[in-house]
Image (cartoon, rainbow over all chains, first blue to last red; front, side):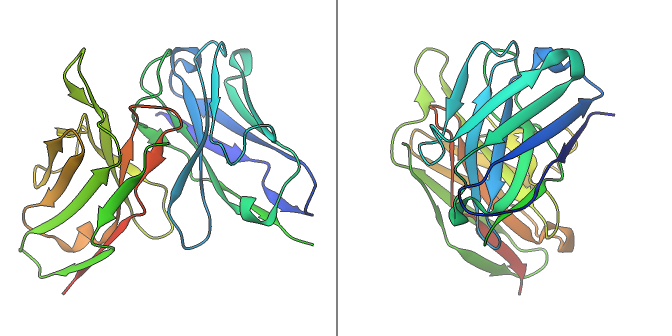
Length: 121
Length: 113
């Protein structure tokens, strides 16, 4: 069964850092581009960042560029999101989602259940 | 960035009736080289992650009932639920993957009248 399991969320102060992880199973991890999508409480979806299957390219939303870094460790079937200089508006459920090829994200066919990040003093 | 605008924000339809959700993109998402619209639809039920239901604007994901129909091209798209069932109550999002950063519509909440 294909699964994505996020972890690493929690409460952090403004200006702080957090690293999210997404453990993948049930498919060849390196053969798929991956993304992070977030959803603030009671609101819609926001695409955050994406990375190619080999990690050779990354893309970011303007709202997080320069503060967040997406990476992956294919030997561990794990996707990461390093979040620095966190702000209140970064508070959200962060979902890990799978793209459909190694080179392109396109649509997102599998989603994890998400991990909650709360930025507050 | 491409802005995706959905209408209406919420919709109440009787069981067995048709529900229609619209999505408009600020730029064309039809890629001329492959003649594909880079547009997907997701369904999100309370407390659950989004679920892919339609991609390439009109292709149903495996296992999705055929009452879900995607249509449109260029900048204007529609998701139709041909005969609403109780289990279809959810928020529906369109998503363009034509250009990075990818963007989503604000969501349409579909309820039973």
